[in-house]
Image (cartoon, rainbow, N blue to C red; front, top):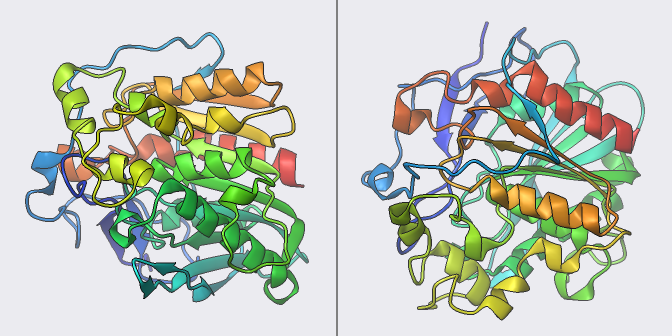
Amino acid sequence: MRPRKIITMLATVALTGGSLTACSSSDDTSNSSTASCPQPTVGGAGANPPAGAAANLPLAKTITPSDTSTSTVIDGSGPAIQCGKTALKTTNDIVYDSPVSGGKQVPLKLDLQVPQTGGARPLVIYLTGGGFSSANKSGNLDQRTYVAEQGFAVASIEYRTVRNGATYQEIVGDVKSAIRFLRAHAAEYGIDPAKVAVWGQSAGGYLAAMTGVTNGLAQFEGTGNPGQSSEVQAVVDEFGPADIAKVAADFDTAAQKSNYTPGNSLAQVIFGPGTKLSVTAEPAVTAKANPATYADASDPSFVFLHGSADQLVSPSQTLALHNSLRADGVDSTRYVVQDANHGDLAFLTGDANAASQWSSQQVMGTIVSFLTKHLT
């Protein structure tokens, strides 16, 4: 019997103005027991965003095509991913840290899926999107389950957001804290602590990239779960921003204006709560939030995937970071998914197939192949 499927909006609208958003499927069961992975649907419970949210999303009407000479173009067509062939042990709501933000303690939890057989498994930390305004760890259960069934321990984590008063440095610190926690408890959960990757989408893609390029940098470590390494061996970045001051560079004027609204969530994640600045206001400060600033030849291997029709994050964002990493001697590969949008925008378009490319065997197989190459 197929489990009940729920569409969840993983990002809310920016606190002031527009924000990056992503939507994906989640599921109300904890075990993979069906032949098909849960797929995004339109009209189900939770399919619609909060009142007024859709009207405020900074969707681009025009997108300038970016150079693909250093990328591989794929179409994302073909059959959807299949689940239910590997038994998984799922443990939900594990508290990995309780940092203090805005004078309040914020318990941060993760959900963990581990194949039941085969010994210690390489770890993949999944980072959901949410425009830095939300971090729903229950998202994308279909894709997470698929990756776990290929032989990986997959942990989907909560992290602080601008609603907690957190900046990008503190949020990256949360990711690293989760990595240290899981390394410390590797034997308990059946994890190989020597093999860790981060995989993120949208804002989560940005955090994955930042985590990868800041291996060993003290200012991003935070204080949670000391005594373990937070270094990662591979990074998967799906349609994440990089140079946030240019996040709408490929878009029409109206979309640029919305993304660059002073004080929005993008500005707050860089400058802090209550800022009245735009992300374009102080280039030197914004540059410190750009993963390219920290890249060097010692960084782990990267793979990027971006839709050519992304209306929320300019495709040139992953291109610029990819090219920068390559110039610094980092092993980086980039795929452009032809005509794909920004994850699942079915709640706006009414198209039940809006996210099908991202859950195809072609796209997910590309991710699994990369993880297998670098973690096994």
